Image 1 (cartoon, rainbow, N blue to C red):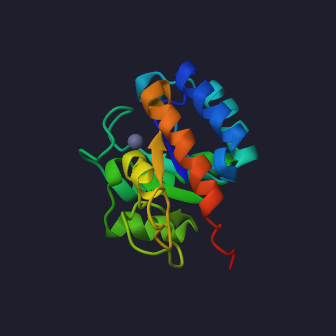
Image 2: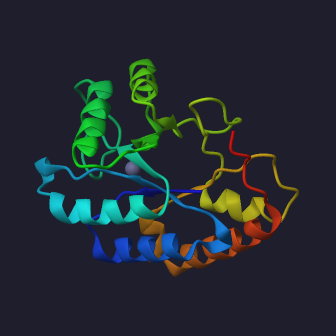
Length: 192
Ligand SMILES: [Zn+2]
């Protein structure tokens, strides 16, 4: 289970995410794939760090790069791999060690994949397929998860949602119900 934390500085979205990660519905860790603050858009680094450290202390932590802006995930110029490496370095300088990566808007390219691998992060950007060394593909959206949990389960499930999904009770409650049901039916992947 992972959450694309798109609005880490939105108090309401953060409070919902924080509560869900703490509660661990279904017994699952929720990987926080967090978008770093973008000073070009006036985002507050100190408050961001406080929240990211809290999430990282509790569950697996990862980087969710938005290449263009807080609301425009995919690249529109520049060197995408370079931005990933700069964000990893920025996190590490502040004592945060990302273990996972997911490209904003599911963007990736050969150089980004090489940068992620070189930095030692597990890549969640791949949609579908089986986990392998260095990748933990994302397989289910919220809607797909809600349908999957009432059927014979596939061998591997990695569902994702966005922090802002939690602001909508029509999405938050089905998510909690699906996770509770999945928790009763699933076994975690063996640690290898
Ligand atoms: Zn995003």
